[in-house]
Amino acid sequence: MVGWALMKMPRVLNAAYELSPFVQRNRDEVLRLRETLTAVNPDTYRGIGRCPLSEIPDPDAGWVEATPPTTLTTRDDKARRRLLEIIGADHTCDHYPCSLVPTLAQAHELLLLADDPGEYEVVRLSRDNPGSGRLLGFDVGYWGGGNYSILCDSIIWPMWHPPVPAALGDLAHHVESLNDVTLFPDCASAERFRSFYLTQSWAESEDEPGEFSVIRVEAVE
Image 1 (tube, rainbow, N blue to C red):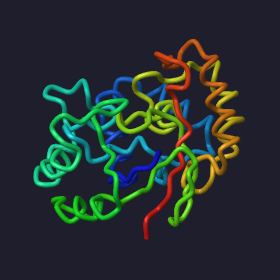
Image 2: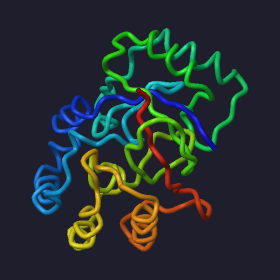
Image 3: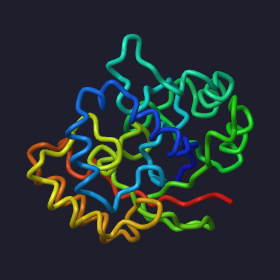
C-alpha cells in the first residue's frame, strides 16, 4: 500500500503543543518526559502524527479540549474540498479522517491549493514499499488516516495515552535508535517499539491484530 500526504512542519506544531491546555495542565509530567528522553527533539519529528491535510479539520495536539477547540488546520478550505473530490464522496479508509491521495501529482495539486504551502511538506507513505523519494525513517500508527502515531503519542506530543513514569526508562532505551528526524531508521527497530508498546497497560490498544502499522516515510524532493 502506498499513498501521498501533506504533513505540517514540526516546529510550528511543537510550539502549539507547548502552549496547549493539555501541557499547561500537565506541565510537570511533560517536563519529566523531556528531561528523561533527552534524545528526543520534537522540533525535528517528520512522522505521520503531524496534522496532515485531511477531509475534516483536526485540532493540534493538546488543543482538543479547548473551548472551542483551537487548531491550525481550520484553514485550507480549497485544498480540503479538492481532497474530497479526489478521494470521492463515498470514500473509505481504514481510519478517519482520511489523508492519503493515490498519486504524487494530486499531492502537489493540494499543496498549491493550501493557504500557505510552506506550512506543509509532501511525504510518500507505504508499508515498507520503497519508492524514489529520500527515506526519512519509519513511524508506527494507523495506516491511511486517523492521524495517529503511537510514537508521537508516547514521546513527541503525548496527549491521548501519555506514558506513566515507570515506563520512561524503557522508552529511553527505544528512543536511542531514533534518527535525526526522530523516526526509527529501519523497520526492525520500529517493530521492536511496536511490540514493546503493545505490552503496556497505559498504551492505546489495537481493535484488531496488526492495526498499528510500521509505516515507511519518504521525503518528496
